[in-house]
Amino acid sequence: MIAIRHPHTHEVLAFQRADTPDTWQLPQGGMKAGEEPLEAAWRELLEETGLGGVEVEFVGEHPEWLVYQWPQEVQRAKGGIHHRIGQAQRWFTFHARSGDILPTPDGSEFVAWKWVTAEWLIDHVPAWRRPPYQIVLGQHPVPGA
Image 1: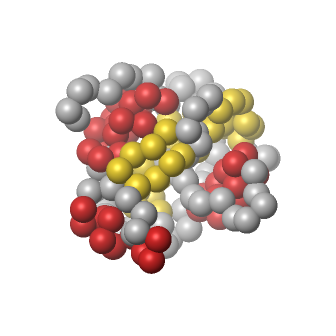
Image 2: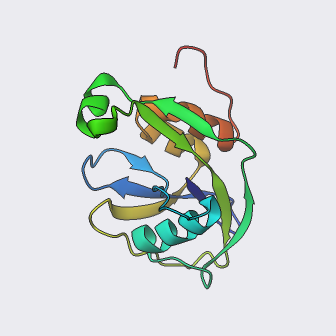
């Protein structure tokens, strides 16, 4: 996951999903064979948002992998032949070099973007994705959420 912080307000750059218009999230993606996690983050950031080193700078990463389980309907849709049940993620933080950056959502995963508070974003990601967002964006998960 890639959290991009505004240089002045510290808001987070959120992206609206193309497949579920009422949900928002951070850029993310899988690693290719031989790719390191940070290298994958830079590649996914460019592919999904059009942003690169000119617009953002890397500032850190969460020290642990975070995992979550998909709900049954997502497991059926995304589990594939390997019967995956969720995701393990590495989280990276970037700072925008300017508050005037202009992401270009890829149109297939994301269709819009905006600066939001961490709390707003947590409220607009699917409930099953919230615990990692709460951990990394500075809130503690609520038991049973």
